[in-house]
Length: 314
Image (cartoon, rainbow, N blue to C red; front, top):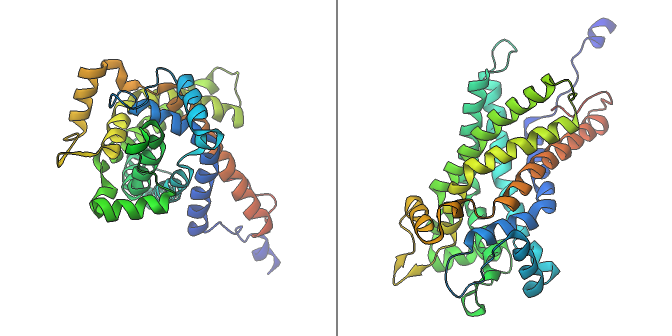
């Protein structure tokens, strides 16, 4: 009888709790990187409209925000950023975990190609669910660069969502959905492949051990590659979601129209405008998300499941 008790497998963290922790970890990381997201969006919108504030560099954007909007202005759109994590990250993590378990056979995880495909699928669906919050985030972070008479003046993400529905219709909440989903698929594919490869190469040098520092370096390398690959899609998404109707017609016909106009009016390399804050946000956000997630898993295992020996599960 005692032998059977000794061999009893340890309690596992439930799926619902894992999804909750995933979204919470993403939200916690966003609190730290929201200013970078704001600067990235301002940089991407810079170049549109002759009267709006233009930013030549990320530092110039930061100085302009602090001067015109104050210290609190650097966290403009935080509520929308948190809602985006609560919807996008939770959905992506939930679908990834579910598909991963479904496609694991005889205790063996899926091969690398299948993992990448699962990541692309989860990222695309998560992006669709998170698009309304993304639209609100883009508009809230872009507002301060416009003349006062043109600003939308959303008070919070809830105010933004209600006003968008009331003034422009429910469908507007999914404006730019196609490039948003496309960006998420590109980001997930690039992150999975480059992170895995970077980690493998770093370990093979003999200078790294599997741990937090390795994860940090691999995340930053992955972030660099992912940023370069996804920024043109991201700038198209940003401008479509922030566009206004002019004489009853939208400013852009679609993502390709945005890219064509950006290249024609601002130059080819403007497709990577805001590269520095985008890259600076992507790597740390990934690292911070996993640090918070590991700590949440450890605390839950220790205090709720009474398993002090459990790891973070990553």
